[in-house]
Length: 115
View 1 (tube, helix red, strand yellow):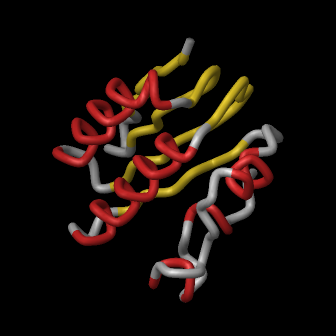
View 2 (cartoon, rainbow, N blue to C red):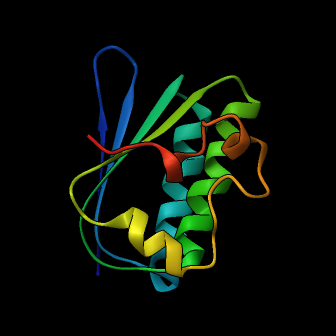
């Protein structure tokens, strides 16, 4: 099960809090929330904590969202609790920075350090 909560702040920024099973079976609600966020705020922060499972489909949605926000001149970032998402990304087959300009320039969310 995925836990998802959208927090709109007074300054116009939005934080999407995610935890639980971040897998293909839960991608649709994530996709809808990211699209919803793309319409309004100048910045979306995805806060990820307490991950039970993660797969490449989930990571691909985050990657696509990052590209879409950047293309529209908006800010998209991922904040991580100590949930080991970077290690889990490694087994997913997604290699940060290998075939994406965002990785080459150090802006890929998979290679940013969590807070």
